Amino acid sequence: MFESENQAYWTGRASGYSQVNQTELATGQRKNWLRVIREQIGKRFPGKAPEEIHILEVGCGPGFFAIILAEAGYRVTAIDYTPAMLTEARKNAGSLSGTITFLEMNGEALAFDDQSFHVVVSRNLTWNLPHPEKAYGEWCRVLKPGGLLLNFDADWYGYLYNEEKREAYETDRRRTAQAGIHDEYIHTDIDAMEAIARRVPLSAAQRPSWDLDLLGKLHMQAAADEKIWNRVWSEEEKINFSATPMFLITASRPA
Image (cartoon, rainbow, N blue to C red; front, side, top):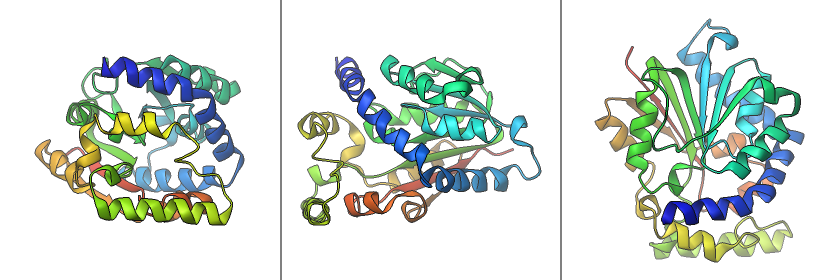
């Protein structure tokens, strides 16, 4: 029941979320994001050409990561659980849609063989999953030996369980209004989003320590960069989300 409700919500969000991705593609953010991802891949696979690296994006949404990575020459497979998101992704990819393999798939149950990909990347997905430990297990399973996991996320709804975080969240809302910019929280269906957040485990978890603990149990070498938001977010995002800074989880599978 929860999964169908969740999918219905994101089906309704597909068009609006696609506009967000289109803005990212039209601005300098695409360069910022690509620079960060390429740096991580370059550290893990020095000297390897992009076309030699197969990347899986989990929860591709309207296609932003898949598009910029395909443009950079990487082999890209991109999956999403919501068909409407994949429709938007293919439209946004344009002429690149033929070079990206888009598939409808559950990120917690991947239909790929073990050791299929050099890199697994995701953004703003794990917080929304009913079984994030299963997802991490699957993502690690499909990595080749020496492979790299990159997960960008944030403690988006921790304010539902913590009064200090609630106060910081409310401060963000006031500052966003004072700055006269679009509020990324209240201009979505916040009631629906909070209802989803209350039913998934990571809203109440301490992150990114939760992620690092789990990846350690999965025998991955993991680290967190809690300042990555400063390199990839726009100025508007920094005002909107200062109480919920984005972090980057990097994890490597032993060679």
